[in-house]
Image 1 (spheres, rainbow, N blue to C red):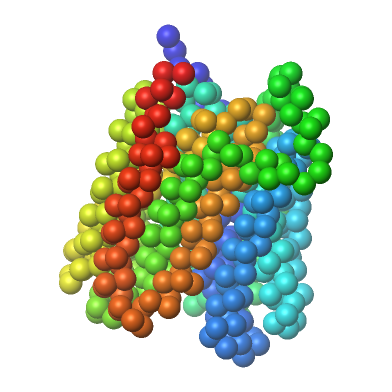
Image 2: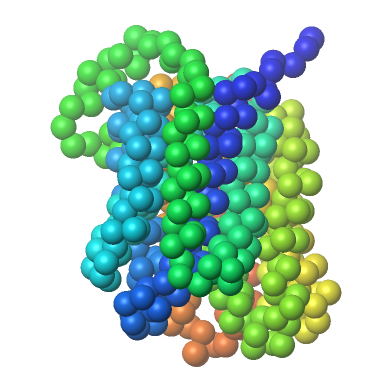
Length: 398
């Protein structure tokens, strides 16, 4: 029996849109704090707020998008998100003072939350159910590539064009490409079942179920804990590598991390579809814990980069499998809510982590802080078992 087709035109286009959105996000994330300091003499803490308020906007965007998708459909929601994304990308040219820059960063994050949740939902609709793990794995590679390329290109552009406005211009061009390619996308219509029609009719007013998919909450909560444990690596790598005199190796960390994920995800996604999630999740979390241990104790460039490879293999693959699980346990007519629920929890862990862990750095130091995250990862293995793992075999047979 031949496999259902995965690499369709629409799958590729939506993945490209997701890549460009994430690329712009990371190009700005590594440069906008410097822009705020150089243009408006912002303090270090205020420059940090300019960077992080984007995440708050993204969370707000994700919170409302699941409901919007349920009301108007995923394609119209993506169009709304991309129009807002292009408009707020253009508004960086009109950010003449710090309050305007802060406001636009929030709105830009809001538009990214809407657009990226819509792309994730459309992908879930496009992927054949029997290849969902594999498809989500390939799709998430678009964000992984942007994660590796975005910071590199952003820093390079600031070195070539110190006034920052060339970055804004390039980002504006990329946002227009997103809008243009969107016109080529065709999204399959979701067949409305009797139960989904009844549920939609009862969804008037403010209800938690209108914004959160409860069936996706257990695996999303595990993703929150794992995102929290990884957030310190993402935020403090440059400071940590400088403190242990491994700046050169540190500059290659995310490149190695991304390469390992790109090489492994096609296999792990396919394995999930045939053998279930447990066969990937448990080894991934153990490998992540080993990688974090090595990271916390790194004394040479080779050890630091080996840690990057193990963290990519462990954390990186858990992330795509968890996203696929959030979708798999959810009825088709609530895929938008499942996608937004997963990323609300996951982004919250990534967003609040650096803020909370930042208070602990002066007390424990970087090495002990990262070593303590190993305990958090090991606890998450137990959480995964009780929240999903023990039911995974039944889900595979369903």
